[in-house]
Length: 337
Image (tube, rainbow, N blue to C red; front, side, top):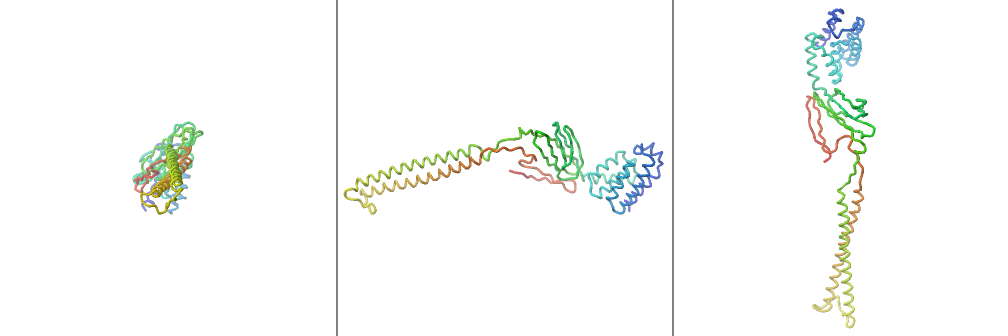
């Protein structure tokens, strides 16, 4: 009932002041004809009726129609009421600023107190983003809509709290997307600077370039050591064969059951030494070959890749600020580490 009374009070207020007096004394009435005022009052009355019937969308349309005829601060405040009911708080904040451009004078005391209440209510319901760019020819969009058509320039916009995105493009430069988190009642400043394509590219590797080479060359070195062991093992086996031919040619030798401290025992020790060294050689060669193969794979995987600067600006740790209903914010840390 109080809301209805305030709206009715404003309607009556329009009728109390004469057209000539308004035109002379009130800046918001200058250059407005009697017909425009009458048409505005008709649209305003219909908007008020729809507002009281809770048809806020159509009421807002009627208030817009009235404002086209007469940009009266009190009509605009009724429009603010409807926008708030529709959840369009950023627009409501813009229009409330316009309604207050002449201060208290356009309103009676009760309505002005309500205006101040709405001003306090909306203070944390939207934020501001000011975007500036200096590079000639760059174009900016905000949330997918054209924002700054040609840089250099600067522009400010009121928006609802939450995540938004500024995207900058220019011929010969990397496209850059800048996520912006707006907190109610606060202003975010975004300065756009694009990176030329010829400076944005860089060659990166999976590992430092020396690591695969160390693995590969190290594998080859181990394999070489294994080959030397293999050669020594074969030399010892050849010596063993020659000794068997010399020592056992006439009387024969029982190498399966040699007597202690006998010629046969000495020959068996020589054979076992050669076989043991051969096994070590095979193991070392295998380890070296596998290591060299791993190094070769690492060299292939580590070949240079051309990459460009992250257009979203989200490389590494990212600080996110999530708005809360009371106009505050919650800070979280994320990203790639």
